[in-house]
Image (tube, rainbow, N blue to C red; front, side, top):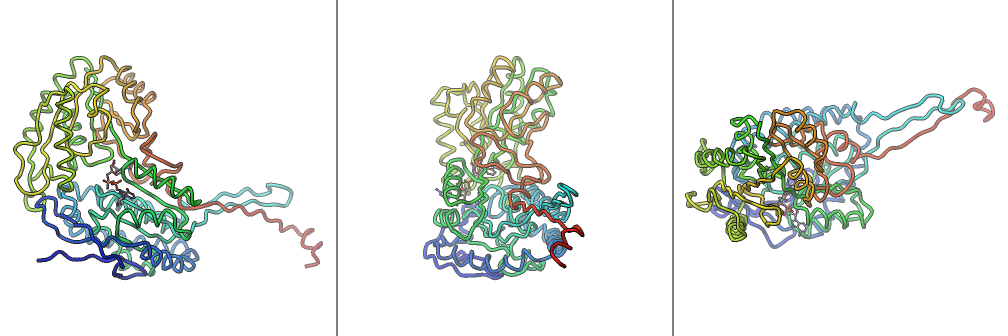
Length: 491
Ligand code: NAD
């Protein structure tokens, strides 16, 4: 059967792209092409922005409780369709069903948060701020906002953006990753089913041309981006140059520090989840284990045994699969090359994920390289796959210095029973999300997803109150309604 050519979603219904070229959507477990994403031209962006601009005029005037009512209905529909959506995520992304359910659940958490918009968007007031004058501030929507998202969380990352923007009274144009467009299309159809007016949420599928057009289109007020750091920086520059608000989250290289007093079983379980969950394709994936003192060898041995026991199977047909494939053949080839160049640089391969993997699909088995040092490429580059490095800095202070020399600043984790070590680490490490005996300290809906350094370009992060502030601007009104003034005016 030939793969389906997908469409855009503009003005409340499917809309054929004007583009002639396409990108393949794979089932990464088998390597089969299951759909074709249209690589839309700038004209399609313009059509979507026009639809969103027209819808904005009415949507911004829709009372806040009516907007919230549609979000409540949307949440109910997402719950009703939870199983179907999770299977779709697994099919186009390759993550296990449990991971797909987690992806969707974290997205629904944001819808849940956005349902409280009446409270979240409340402004401030000061009565009698000057004689007979009251001051009131309100948060107003910006207009048409755009979202550009990566392949690794087909539900959660788009849902970091559009439910909040729309709850605030904006309209939205989403460009999902061309590698995983199916989930976003279904999520958008369900929002329409929940009662969202036509044109409030639109999708333009595609690649670079769509991104550049969204970042420069005069009808767009704000751009939210999540993806790799080099594209994040480019999106930030392009959007800022045309006067837009931009929040652009980038890549990461997250360290997991193990102190000699760490509890071994729970620490190894947490590291396995952080390093190999979602096949290492998470911006909060644990990428380097730093074992201090005698912790190093013990953890390395236990991790090798746990990695040997991990069930790496196709995720769409083997329900017991504990780790799925990576997204496509080029990701697999890049990871195979990184393992080889790590060994060439002097790291010792403890477990080689190029061996004993399913013959079909895009698999890389759990890989562990030991004796990694700060100068190696393995220690500096985001690999974005199931390849874990182990390093042995000789003290907590040396480990903190290593973390703080990173280009990135998403997450860092410490495993310890010492409150003093945990406190020193949490205070000194230059990252936005810290875990203490938690493997993946990814912020959830009520907190900002708080990357630092080159893991984030902008000011206000996605999620939490920062998300509300990003998608609104303040208006301040000062009023005088005293009798003397009214008499002067002759009313
Ligand atoms: P990516 O940067 O390749 O793609 C992200 C988006 O940008 C996609 O929609 C893609 O179509 C578009 N794009 C790609 N190249 C482009 C270019 N040259 N010009 C304009 N647009 C372009 O990222 P990815 O491979 O889809 O996702 C993995 C990356 O995302 C990793 O670096 C990961 O750390 C990061 N990520 C970060 C976070 C976070 O919150 N910081 C969350 C998830 C993923």
